[in-house]
Image 1 (cartoon, helix red, strand yellow):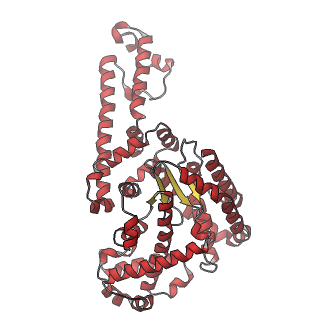
Image 2 (image 1 turned 60 degrees about the horizontal axis):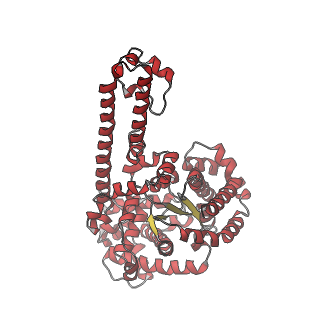
Image 3 (image 1 turned 120 degrees about the vertical axis):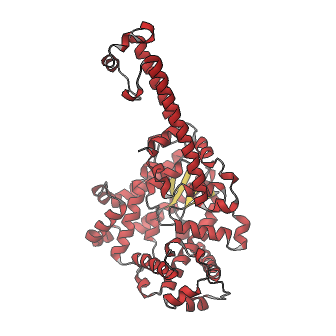
Length: 465
């Protein structure tokens, strides 16, 4: 199974690099957004010519591999997460790495296909190239995680069937439209019957719109402000304009907001079908997506409530995407693979989950509450880890005159032992001599490595950087 999945992933990245490799390697070291801005300003026309035909080639690639890929995904065991929200995770390498320290496999829709499926003319060509390069580079930055030498796949790229099957688009559009109407009825505390009546309100000025909003807590995070409702609406408006969608400059703030929410709900409709089909946990890398997902599950349609619930694992994997846990994304890939191949992922899950399962459902719904408990769990574990390190150092310093702070853990040579400390080599261990001294240094190093290579020790090394 792993060999089949890996081959499809390898072929995908080879195809993407055939088209974008020269741009990617010439901008190596730059973040995806910076590289995309530079390339879109200098090479839009050239790239538009070079990608001619890529849409059909990628579609054929996925049509050929999709039955096998989806069949293999269904066979996967353990906890699986499906990414949803933006076209690709903002920092895909960090997002996947953090998630890999909790779930067995993270599944991410192909971001290149997603951009190529944008409706023609929706974006200016330069902005289209900017999005294409940004999301292509995002996923290329994390390709090692898709191709890792792991007993179980860390991550898998797959095609979003919403882009490939018109019937799925129609269902998503219908369900998204229903969700939007219900959402705004709750936001305004009204009984608006149809979208024409809703649009009349949303086309009003910001001042009028602000007065219509009765439940501020239902505004998505980017449209909130501690100053006033209007200030939040205007901040959200600026973010909407930043997206450079051609028609947005003609929209009122309310209609931009509706357009954004509608797009999110349409995507959620498809995403939730796939979470049920493949038994996935929903993963988001930003707060807006999780907020609307949460609304749909907890406050949304009764038919949705019957089949989906917020669960502990979903809350935890999204908690780990908060800024407070950004250090988790710095755990080296070889250590992530080592932990997983040693079967220690469950130990980490139990550490994160400790006492979280005692929170009420309303608190599990609040990621800040889950975050507090997870941070407490980690801090407690780190305190014990540091105590174990100190205790071992003290033991060897008192008994054998070995100072661990002067040793490079993981390496030892006879020469180094002779150089430091020469006098001690013949006095420790009751005159046991140089060989016994070297042996005790080696013993110390092995015991210290055993402590530092425990799951908590590996996490602490990244936390302490």
